[in-house]
Length: 338
Image 1: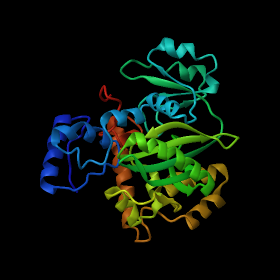
Image 2 (image 1 turned 90 degrees about the horizontal axis):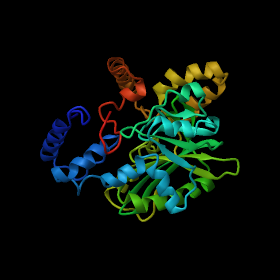
Image 3 (image 1 turned 90 degrees about the vertical axis):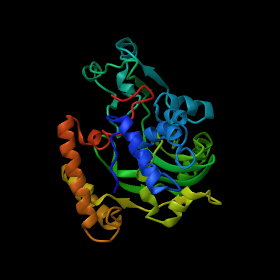
């Protein structure tokens, strides 16, 4: 394990520490796993890491992560996406508040479903106060079920792909159980990922979609980093190999999985409240735990300890668990961090 300074709190220290680690370890490839990808991409030219950082340019990262720019990209590529507009002040919010129940409001740069308001009441909408430094977006509300896909692009071509749904989710939207979508529909999403891979160039990206009553997928946002889609590969070697070189055909992940500790911490209370105990039991029996992978409880115990540490971090920072988990690496656009 190697520690480095927080890129949001100590950006100079972060660059210094990453430069030292690169000098000491001399890696062949640096694969970011979360929001540190944004900070690494910005620091890469200064540190001479551009050739070994597995990520697209800072501008492409922003184009994907921005909930406004990503929809513009979808429109340019001819991909279905809901009407989306940027909000920079209260006047913008007031102009679209008359039919708020048909709209979704969310911060332009956010993750884990944080700050998302789906069909909000007037009282909730009154608390939305976007600024030029921290804009929001308003999106047409698409009715349907949620789907996700995860992909890896190498030199503009799709190298890795998985499409899945999350039958068990936290209130903010983050899932902790993952099931592959049927192959025909997955192929439809893979065609979308192939178009996006041409824009990404080299790097990881993942999309959230809403599938309407006509089975048409609508892209609502993108995360240019690793997501739960990696669990669909069951720890297979070919996933790692795809990062090192472009495979002859995309590596497809279709393994079912769950986060064991989360199924107990969040899933069991939800199952009791919703009368889904049988579903919960089936999920635990049929879907492997992606944390332990049948290797005993040590990894699960470590995950629980991590969660306790994150919870303490959340109390100190005054935010929720989702924010605490990425507080030190969260990204809020090219203008900086909040």
